[in-house]
Amino acid sequence: MSKIIVLSFSRGEEEVYQRILQILSESPHFEGYNEFQVQKHISIGEMKLNLAEKNVVIRGTEVILTNKEFEILYLLAQSPGRIYSKEQIYDIVWQEPYSGDYNIVMSHIHNIREKVEDNPSKPIYIQTVWGVGYRFNKNLSSGL
Image 1 (cartoon, one colour):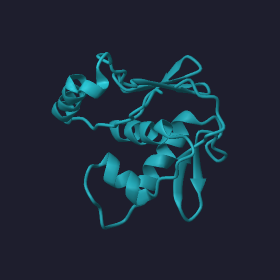
Image 2 (cartoon, helix red, strand yellow; image 1 turned 30 degrees about the vertical axis):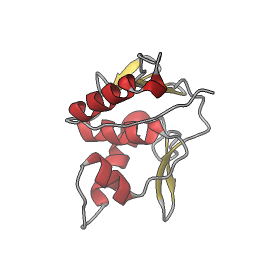
Image 3 (cartoon, helix red, strand yellow; image 1 turned 90 degrees about the vertical axis):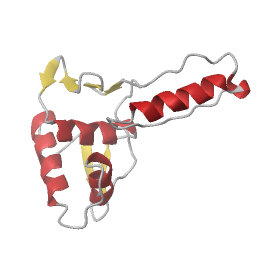
Image 4 (cartoon, one colour; image 1 turned 60 degrees about the vertical axis):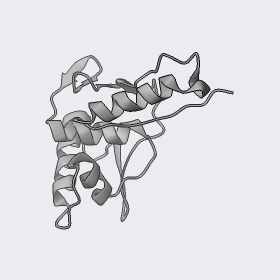
């Protein structure tokens, strides 16, 4: 039986990532599993996200996002259907707890929608779950 481990690392955590891979590759339970796949691309619907280049391409056209916008979009796209609160998004993307106004997250979501959606007032990719947070549309065909 195959088992899958999904880990997500932020920039600056390369040492942690490398150490985990080293421990796994040296473990007798993982004998023969010397190659690990790291998800560097996500394709959902007509959208392709490239983690290495931090770019987004929709229908063959590159969409220019700021670093924070890309990180928010990538976070949501990694787990279509999973709902993230504004607080969770801020804590993960900004890598610090925030105890103030989460309008910054809402503003970034608005900017992302303006750039990636054909009709930002009726978003296809990033959905709002009223009173809870945001999620990436799980009904789009996935090419993970």
